Amino acid sequence: MQNVYTVKQVNAYIKNMFTQDYMLGRIYVKGEVSNCKYHTSGHIYFSLKDESGTIACVMFAGQRGGLSFRMGEGQQVIVMGAVNVYERSGSYQLYAKEIRLDGEGVLYEKFQMLKRELEEMGMFALEYKKPIPAYAQRIGVVTAPTGAAVRDIMNITRRRNPYVQLILYPAKVQGEGAKESIVRGIRMLQQAEVDVMIVGRGGGSIEDLWAFNEEEVARAIFDCPVPVISAVGHETDTTIADYVADLRAPTPSAAAELAVYDYGKLSGELAEAKVRLSRLMRQKIQLERLRMREYQTKLKYLHPEHKLREQQQRLSDMEDRLRAVMQGKLTDARHRLAVYVEMMKGLSPVGKLNQGYSYVQGTSGRAVKSIRDIKADDRLSIYVTDGIIHAVVDEVKEVEHG
Image 1: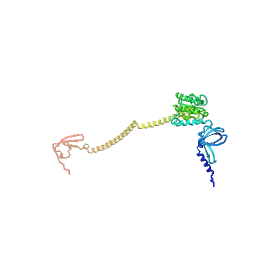
Image 2 (image 1 turned 60 degrees about the horizontal axis):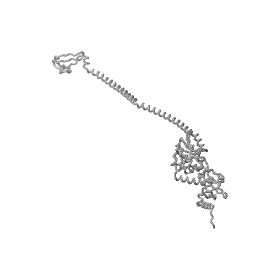
Image 3 (image 1 turned 90 degrees about the horizontal axis):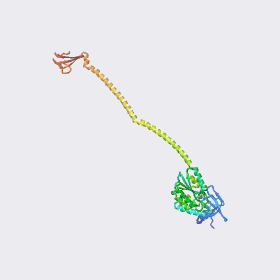
Image 4 (image 1 turned 60 degrees about the vertical axis):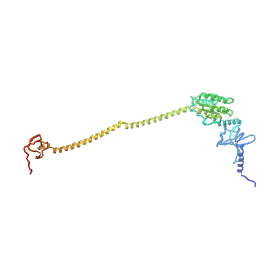
């Protein structure tokens, strides 16, 4: 029995054949665009046809960078991509990676070759990109003296900041001698010591923009010590100058927006900053005043004068307490003295004398208490209430008490 295959197996086999064919992996196909549809997913579905046939094509959203224009019916294009089989339907189609209008093929290849060469030399590297000054005062412009590009740059500059000085080098930007004119313009504006430079022109075909794909122009931009903004064509146009420049602007108008700071916006920001600064200053002053009052209170509390007054008050209190203690001691002493005086009064000979007694003192100065203390002819001093009586002992006689 003959081998029987499923549809899936056949489609997979055919797809494998397409995949292994080197030529079909990277192929350029020329034809007329038909049935072109932009899907909401970002994919583009279309067909290429010529007088003998049609091939289905798709460009997925992730490959849209390879398309620099909007496709439409009837355009003659060259599509670079891979031919492969869509297994579900069993049909083959061209999966597009790059699409360009027919007639630009030779220039496009030249563009890609120079781009790869300069990229390998490092001329596109980010580390060589110079920052664009935020507040440029002198801006150089290398472009045609007539046309929409220079008018747009002038109008936007006047609107954003009338105080910025524009210095225009009227360059030839298309045709024979254009690249030399652009290079001279870059070097002359460099000598004019501008702060930033805009190099560009309005949109056009790849032939119209080719002066900005020349190696001489690329090297002049790369070697320029002044920051350069490229502004060539429309947003979808890309030139070698865009890759070499310090900053790419999609249009000349956008280049002016990037190079010229908005004076009105800056004035508004400065006014807002002034208000914020004033408010912060007031808050800071109020806070410092509050701190100063706290420090004043602490200083009053900790001031030596306050300490001295406290010590004086302590000393005054201690003096009062000492006086009170001393007064108490004196009162107690006076009371005891009065008691002792009264006691002494009871024992004092003078008191006895007042009661009719007398005090007899011998020659030795001692009190005579017994007859044995004296003898005949001794002198005696007899103390009475109102004086002293001197006497001589005539006789000493003992008396018996019964």
